[in-house]
Image (cartoon, rainbow, N blue to C red; front, side, top):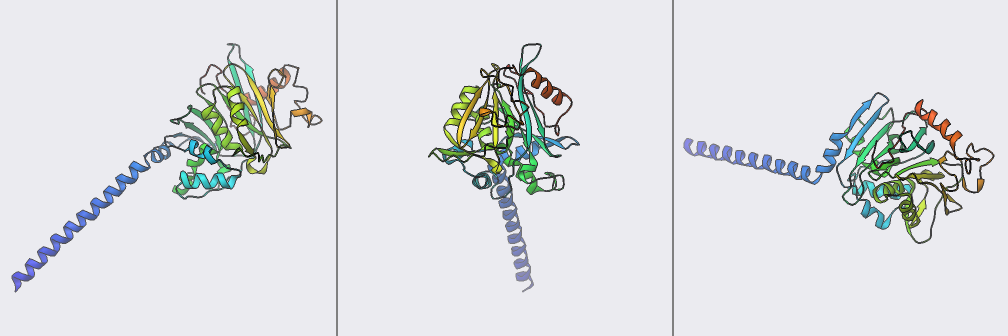
Length: 328
């Protein structure tokens, strides 16, 4: 009888041991599987690091943020953009998006005859993030994101917990400016008028997702303008915006949407800088420091903007680019 009990105990121990090994093996397989499926996202989160005490961060994006899939149906509202990003990128983690901010942009040429794109970000103290992207079907680029626009803040830092870290994976769809490997640069600026909701039957796109599209798909100002013409523009944050776009050749244009119509203001017409006033048809001419920009070469205002950037104007989210096709 005792032998039978001992034999039974040995059998149960052996069975439990085998079961334990099987469970551990299953867990290991699951961990490896998850690691393989989310390899790009994990590498991206690991790359997230703080650059200074501002705080300012940088991140290299190794995952696929599915821009080509997004451009099939687009998004007419911030909620639709958030829904796409939450489902396709954040795997169910929700976030808020609320872009805003007053800014200045300009182009200039330095003493080495290189074309520069300058930009400052006049806003409350914010969390800045440099995002480096390298899409399979697009151009490499760097862009600047205000993480406050993704629901993060100095009181709710991106490093506070894992959920906040995951939210930073939405950054490719929230750029305020950037430059790609071809030297194509774009910046967005708030304007008093210009809130737009086009509905002409084209694929809808929002302000920040339009910047991502231009950085990934356009090599020149002309290409960027043609891209934008193919989509119905919709204001992010229910605010009016305009874009300044520049390329490696020194060409530039300001794109505005007034009364739901797209207007392109060219370098040939004298438009080489932009602030927070509508340029089209001198709509804000009484208040606009750039109201005499067309035809005057832009030099006085460019000097003011350049001095502002050199002195650290705004909250420090400044960007300049090498017109030779490089990226800073």
